[in-house]
Length: 260
Image (cartoon, rainbow, N blue to C red; front, side, top):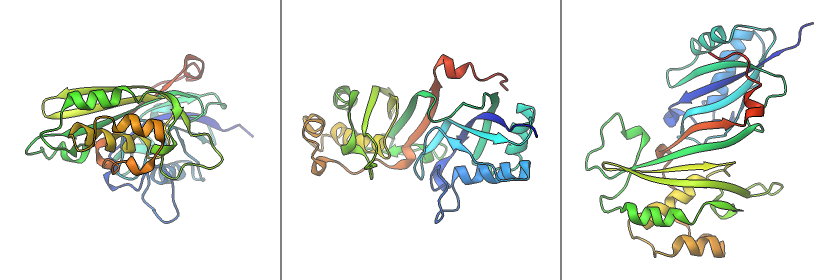
């Protein structure tokens, strides 16, 4: 009997109508469930899909990565087309590669990038509306950049996590937060080895309040020093957040033998 073949897929989705990435008993419409259903039809057997990042409800992705096994070897391009033909319009597989059996989308990842977008526009164009969070026209990029400057590093980010796991370390290495301005839009690009659930949105909630001058200029510093959750702002809206890409170190990347 032949061994299953493992594939790596790069996936994009509009998260608006999904209850997040992870399959849930009480939330039938998730990205993982949609992919597994499409693959079940293709393979005529249950197929488990493992994602690199478990995005929350309403969060989008341009470069989510996942792996799955199929009972027999197939051409990666044909796999991509077969899956897309069975998926709803708000999720698409962009590329498929055959990889070694040991490849793991989550554990082999080197770092991930998330982008948060705010708009100060008086009127937000319909094509942008699902992907940005509204913010006051008074929001200042200088205050935003100064607040973001002190956050990166290797530290315990538990204060920013939603329901942090009791049996897992909450120390993460955040490489950088790059703040940019594009017309009326403010953006914060996060790069890190890993992220806790709700971490980026919690940080962005504080950043947005600081950009608007709603909280003292030392609020982020006090949060990092004290760990006092009473100083947190409301989490930033899910619609402004997008998983941009997942990077794999050369050792893991070499496992990809066929790219589409």
